[in-house]
Length: 439
Image (cartoon, rainbow, N blue to C red; front, side, top):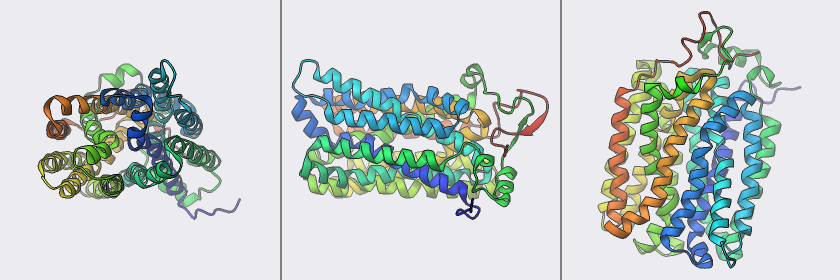
């Protein structure tokens, strides 16, 4: 077969994972934009709408570690493809959920929980792909581009979903995103392979480049999956997971309540909100690859301690400051811009989480990043449900100052992380290429 990739097959795969990441967030964020219409049709209170938001995140959180384990065992190609089919089906069912029957809220909660289960596999499985395909010195940029998809998808959502809402109704917004996801998943399955040695486009030069940046792990156990006990007792996994809880709480404010905050609290109309509501996601899409690029550069020059950890400390610390300042700003548009800066700084640290979990886990990157993301997504569950409760009892400034405080906690946790420590070091005495080897 003629090679159309010219030595850049790994970046084609990362680019398509970025596209899938964007589509997954398009499926995730559309409900926050359609939330007002769903609330009206289903006769929901704000608290009940928060339950609907949380149902997705709960399913998403609970299936992170299982999804990562499946990717470690069966490969990211099949697991991601199956995930896209799953989330396409349940996104469509969200649009079909009946509003005027007994137990309608329960049906909606069940559908959203199930959708979260399907979307859960995308990032742990993509991290397993990174472990096999991306040399260590390029992992910051690779993860940065994968998570740029979050900002792209969430940024496309407000104008796209608003247009569909105004012209076809909220149910069509879910059917359209379902079709987009199914098509993208089919392309992924045709395009991807689990390891470079399986892909006909990989040149010998690219194979050597990838191999040179994959760490050596124990011989016969190179493909051995790290036991759960080892993962759950690791100081690094626990600290990074704690920090990711803080990260996800702050990020999910923007994915769930930010659009409603602009319309109901800051007084922007639907059209203005659809414009200003994009700014945090533009910042995320810009800062995720920027943070990865900075992280890789610092890692090459000063090592992983500075390159991976320091960027996370700085990103989360600055995010806390900007979110606090944006919350206290009086002008709605200025507040939106400053809060968007906070969202950007949150995502400046994103690649550090995923690059470190690949580095310490090797062939079990899916499982370890799944545990981290599971803990993190409980932060998302908390943000979706606690935000309206705090806003009701203490005011909206308090609802935004909490994630600012958590940003400080998440920043400090990184000071105790050792990115050089690996979970696979004691599995066997001999050294051989990692699971990401070319065979």
